[in-house]
Length: 192
Ligand code: GAR
Image (cartoon, rainbow, N blue to C red):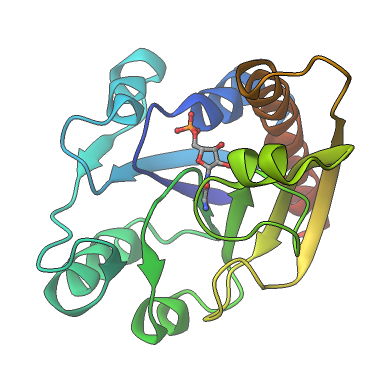
């Protein structure tokens, strides 16, 4: 199972996937490429470290969505990798029908809350401020409606007395780092 990872940030989840692969815990999945819409994103530094091609793709002209020329550039770059699965690991752009149709049923996203609660930006902060007793993270298929596609798997994280946003953030991230590689491994084993 050929995996392409897209991310905009530090790439700790991409790192967790690559560490799982190194340790033989990624099933039949193999990361073939990393792409970022941010030229200085930490996720791109994982490429040389793990021996995986990592490349910036210009997302212009839009700031928060992937549409038009930027979308076409991403589609062409990803298609050239012939992926079986496109993994959004902190890719902070709204995807449009052109992209979703190009990789129909093959795009999964990681979100830092127990969807359908707290979709959109800052899922951890939203949950913390709402005062919930349990939050967590979700891996789901990507559809046109943001953070609303079919849920594949979730991991709960309890919010304990005295919790701060910082401690909760660290716990949710740790849960993400375990969940996403496990889901990818499971999907790869289920692939024909
Ligand atoms: C993760 O917490 C992920 O759930 C979140 O971005 C972070 C990326 O961290 N994604 C979203 O909020 C998507 N709506 P990373 O760059 O260290 O993997």
